Image 1 (cartoon, rainbow, N blue to C red):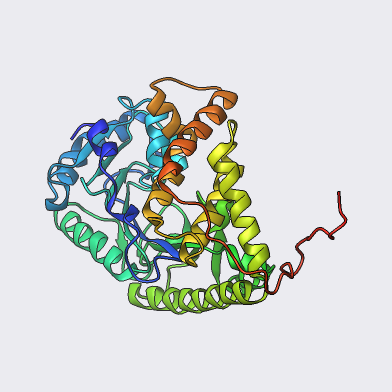
Image 2 (image 1 turned 90 degrees about the vertical axis):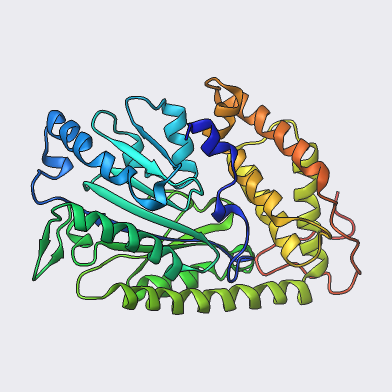
Length: 375
């Protein structure tokens, strides 16, 4: 499959289905694996990484799930194309920064990707819409089982799968969930949630993982340690936490609607107006306003709104996607112009927020509201 064909087709995880899909955007499971017959990537020389890639890439490509999939090594992929894969969560930022001796193989549905010579020899990742960690694990487990039958994995009876980073020892599994939490942010409860999650050993990160900002009120929650727990135990723990956060977000949404309905409609309406008519949009501004529109669609404040249109737009206005569409590198200013143009066009199919009763006009806690005589 060509790169253009892969990107042209919507990914399965972008379909907006799955349990709690109004709040849980995606579920991802990643396995870290190494071979006992070769130095780990961070301790190997370039020629060793190239040789390993030549040896294992055909085996990865032959997996049944990879039939008619996409495969390329990083010497053939442009910087923009690699960043597109990052924005689609198919490869890591760290892997995108590498070149010779590295490759990625992706199935045609973009549900599973295998990075070769990242921090570990293999990073096997499955991604599903909604809260569906068990199906994501099933995807990677099937691929992992086949690879292990054909390759000499580095495994220790005491420490489990051996990995470059000690925190990945054991199962080598990271399970993460992407959540859209606008109501918890608007009601200023998100800090309590982040603190509580951290206390039980889970990590909270932004849109693109560690060190990134939670743009668009999007948060990633994942396990931090893999030693001493089974895959099922890790998934069960995260599922319980996510279910609790989903309940908190739903409660916050109802609280906003009941107590601050007018102000919520106002914020959603302002976001719609800016996105529908702006000629310059930064990534941060666009994502934060799209978050409000998505909230409005979930609360039926925007009627007949297909949420998948907003989710696809959220992806298509990312920097690398804009440059891929333009078929050239763009300056930040050019990207802001292009982002606004695409957003205006896409939102033509989205109706404005519905009218609202003037009951309960109080703003949310910490919000602001003009007095009648404010200028």
